[in-house]
Length: 158
Picture: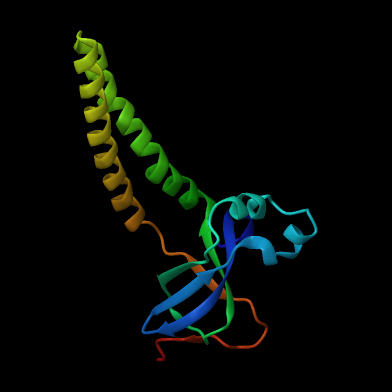
């Protein structure tokens, strides 16, 4: 079930690891050899357009890692798709569902636009919050060490 073909992987650096949690820094994909040679997925090109900062995330982990160690973090492609739909698709659908009734039922153009906007924003925010609650209950990501050495140890020793 954990075959690498059905999991989307991203490389990260361990900042700290303590008590079943690990803080990771996800760098831009510019250090990826495929991106440097021009054969990458294109994420480096789009990533360079937006954020210049590296993302830091605190994640649960059964393994303990050493600060500075490189790991790969994987999420199943199905979970990634459902997360994208919950975070991006639901608010758009909520906005449309909130805006359309007022647009159809109110005849005065000024009031129609105002109530369409208000209804759309309200339902988009509610859908966004619902989507976030779905994402919180999602599956845990897989975190694996990239180094050949045995730098990761089980945090619960029997």
